[in-house]
Length: 156
Image 1 (spheres, rainbow, N blue to C red):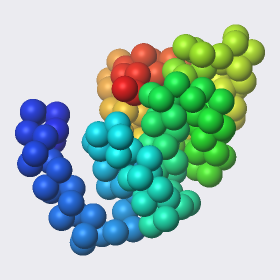
Image 2 (cartoon, rainbow, N blue to C red):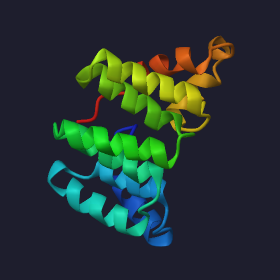
Image 3 (tube, helix red, strand yellow):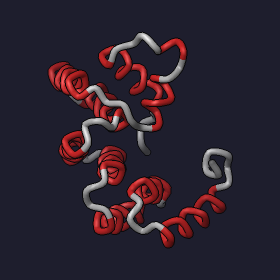
């Protein structure tokens, strides 16, 4: 909340306290990786992977980090790991699809879409936000995935 409203210093302080109290919370580590300055992201991602190596949120944050650094092969591998670990995380599918729309072939985009349709994800902050809107109540996964992907920003 603080970061979205321009209080980055407050967000960093709260995040540091939260990580001390809940060192195994993958969502917090994912946020820490995303908030870290570019030069410190790799270190944060290693720390996050040590603390919660099997958390899909941390894997997704690492995937986005590689995408931001233009390491496209590694990003694709990490996106694949993320959706294999938790195929119910719609945000991971949406970021993976957006990645393939920007850097992949049509076959790769279709492959991600088909795998997502088979998985039928139901979780993730952006996924839930769009899927629960009244205008989306009849949408199937095939139609929802591109909408969620369009709503996400490209990692920087």
